[in-house]
Length: 435
Image 1 (cartoon, one colour):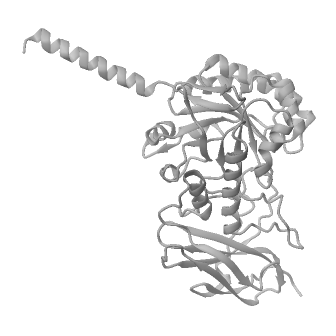
Image 2 (cartoon, helix red, strand yellow; image 1 turned 120 degrees about the vertical axis):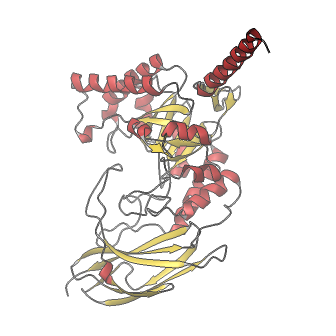
Image 3 (tube, helix red, strand yellow; image 1 turned 30 degrees about the horizontal axis):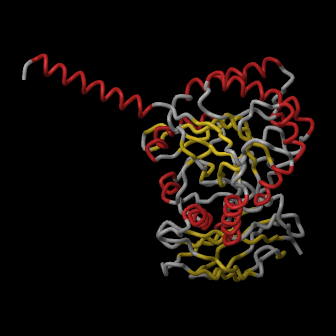
């Protein structure tokens, strides 16, 4: 083969490689469309895209396996995370997962002053820099501009925040016309939604975080007069502010089975009843965190096992249960439940559990102090201390517990594992007091 011919083939090959590289790395164009019937849809490169998402950036292969297609983050710093030595966005692209990229907007309850020109200008510049840095990545679905920054009690007083968000959204759109802007609020309050409609016209998608009332959010959003698409951006079990309490004020955590049912019912109702306005959802939390307890909101244990909530989302997304399911805890029988004991008393507790796949079960019991922190809006909490000496003996689904020596409020946890990467986690509240 002569030199000219070899050079020609080489150049054609390099052009093909360059074209494929450009195609692979091109940012997806994401738009919001309303059809002739008034139904909203998210289009990704012209194709309808319904969000089957989760909040968090862990256990992503499991998300894909369960039928999920998107994740939501809260702060731009999360994109610096590396998984398998790859940046998060690259890792998500390989898995076929889109990302609603959270840009954290400061909260007044954390000390931010929206009347301070310097603070406002600095935040605007940070938003601009974040968008410029990441806007061309193909994994990006949309920008999540802020999360509950209006505050849990703020309604009409949030006008200055809506106006500033409108300015920030304008900055984003000037830098990146290819991705919608979503802002997330806590609950579908009619006053909040009216404030956004009146003062924040640059918003493309309304995100709503809701727990106990999640199944009715679509109706609430419509009733408030919202005329753009919305996404349910956090949902899960009833929140710790929504459940019954013990006589000493400890929130009673829903059982593992009740949590799984909440996830499934919410997703099912949302899909069936809100197809005209809802573009998808993000369940919370595809990972683990300490918030009121170490098991309330996380869909995985710190040790990595998935919990029944994951199975429920798999069924809701795909119509099928996962190959191997989590153990089912039907009941904890314990005199400790919502009771008061003296220090050092012995109490026997039992858990009734079965495994759908007949895997042998392993039981872990532990006593943990009730948190004394009163965090708001998901703020970081420290993990309360454990009391390993309280476990006298345990065999199968039965444990003998010695109550702690110090008066206080506690929880008895039982973790049931099947050895296949699945578990259930339940707890009961009890109190120790001097006679």
